[in-house]
Length: 364
Ligand SMILES: Cc1cc2nc3c(=O)[nH]c(=O)nc-3n(C[C@H](O)[C@H](O)[C@H](O)COP(=O)(O)OP(=O)(O)OC[C@H]3O[C@@H](n4cnc5c(N)ncnc54)[C@H](O)[C@@H]3O)c2cc1C
Image 1 (cartoon, protein in one colour):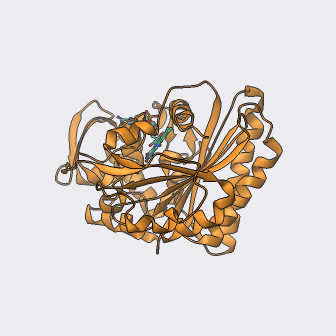
Image 2: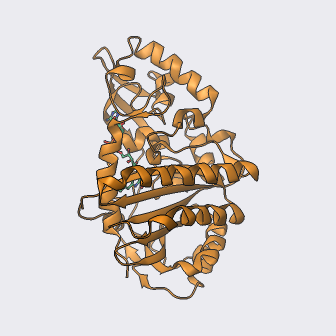
């Protein structure tokens, strides 16, 4: 087994070069941290191996550097023995939000990681919260989940002992056409901050409850200190999370709707939610500069969130490996060192995957 995306529609290149959150994050760090070698086509057409011994400076740059330095044509990842896991989705009414937050805050384990997923679906008129639960051994309801399991009112439950591939398939499904976006930010793993983020998301949603086909979803997942410690054991990356203290929570807002005429106001609402949550986290001293590339909206300044040292390193790597700026100017999409917000390209592909993800999770 190797670490990878948790949805079977997610690719490899973008996932790894942006970091990569897997079922194994608390033990292995980001997927990029488990890379042993990257075969890379550089700006002058050379094919090089990038690893801890060859081009080791660039090896760091590929762990979070996106498409700034080359085209990866092969990844070798740390492999490990793995048989079956326990996991699935448990869905509740969003009236359980406070209990979900308390359980999420307490849920730190090397083999498990709880994702809370809030969703408003205009077509069904439902507001639900779902826990994406997993334990990396075939052990049902490990004690780490006691607090979650004590929350009454489960509407649907798919948890079982399962092959990883089946759980990954459960989080994906057929494509449905729609409009959509991702935006993200990170804050301290703190109940009051988390509750405020949900309240802000809900208040931004309020004017749009009747938008045709609207799915408005917030996904909160932990970045515990154990993830960062695991990253550090594998050598440096660009993400800048070594500056953080304590456990963090990563917030992802994604929305989908049907009519292109709604694009502008939906996207504006998403960025407003992010701005408001950021202000609140700064005001209360709960903010983190980290913006996860693989969840970021195109106007978010991902690379600046890594910190000045990482940006400087990226500039040096670009000058060394791509002196004519091929990947800065000729390759569209992604977050470029020159202008740290994204160019358009990656957005479209991610949107297609998002649709598959959203519509693969069905609600009672
Ligand atoms: C439904 C869904 C589920 C998701 N689940 C997870 C998850 O579990 N964990 C997680 O961490 N993220 C997840 N994500 C986010 C996901 O990691 C990003 O969307 C990521 O960009 C996907 O990688 P890709 O190769 O499929 O992307 P693409 O859209 O193909 O590429 C994204 C960017 O990477 C660059 N790129 C891609 N391949 C290469 C390459 N070989 N060489 C150089 N540059 C390359 C592209 O130029 C582009 O800028 C999910 C996203 C969706 C939509």
